[in-house]
Length: 172
Image (cartoon, rainbow, N blue to C red; front, top):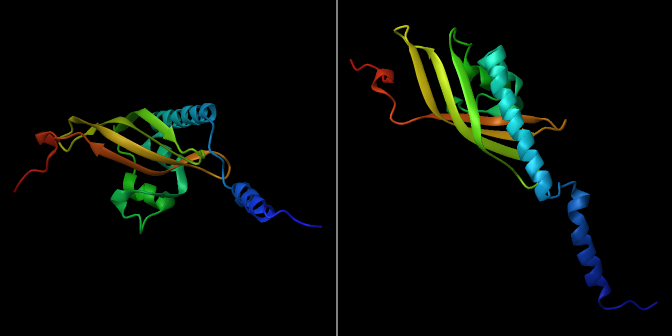
């Protein structure tokens, strides 16, 4: 049996087209699917905030954290997972509340990573006992877990600038 000179080329092209499926790689989400994933992730962020209001800030940050969560402001080389959450958040402060709302949400084409950013508002007692309010922007990075749930792997907040003089440390 004689083979066509194009046969090796056709075989190579066929193998290249099958590699993503054989490797287990996710295929890019279709536009409608991507929009559904974005809506799902936005709902997750809303549920995260709702739990912080209902059960406390630390409880919400612990519940929605991925097992490998890290924070850039608490040395991610030393603190990962729930230890990182507890190091960063500390215990809930009596009278403190934190609310936030996403302005923008997006997910990767393969639907495994997502992020949202928006505004936050923190209320709590100052050193003088008077209520302090801090506002700013937040960024949450989410990762789809093996059980198909979303858990955040990184969260960061940046206060509005300039910080009010009443919030600055007193000079000696």
